[in-house]
Length: 291
Image 1 (cartoon, rainbow, N blue to C red):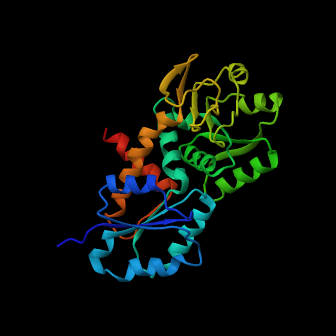
Image 2: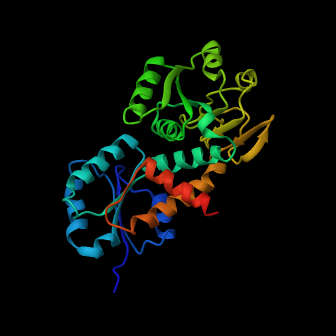
């Protein structure tokens, strides 16, 4: 008899995300254990409890999900989880704090429906944040030339170096977007703009976009007015905006939800999976390939 599928949700926030809990149930999780205020000091014992209560093939029926609003804390928890494992005695784990991986994957896959990413130059506004860095990584792995934009050129350069650290033969650079001249230079010869900044902050206006004649695609991941890219609506899903294809946060969100559910389901196939940005992107690719 197969064991019931248990997902253990670790949130760095005091209250575990209800959003992630609902998606887990919709993905077929039979038992959901939710823990808040998780940190590097208190997670190891909880991981061991997941590892040592089942054995053999039954291990794959237990899995871990790392959430919370702070992505840096989530990354630290993922590292702590992996350190708690003993060789083959382990369970599968997924990181998606603040939707960072599923959102980035959906954004890049949406762009790939309209552009050959291997010959695309893309500017990522708000690119030093966790979603922006993941969008940059996924684009670069598809062969795109990536510009990580920030008002601080130092932060942009630092982020570009960190994103590229374990990637080979990629083109990632940090650029300043502070002021009209810097923005114009950052947009030169770009075909795509991704806005990945803080909610409710406009990162680029229509005047700057109109000056960039090569732009073909706009992807704005901000769902809170005002839009990160002026003129893009949250509901845009491949919409035409002044001769350009536009996606808003809700337009990307449908694919993000499909990827999220599919990733949860994937956790229970084997007990040795670590689902981070690259692995979650691959799940999204498979979804699109299968219609």
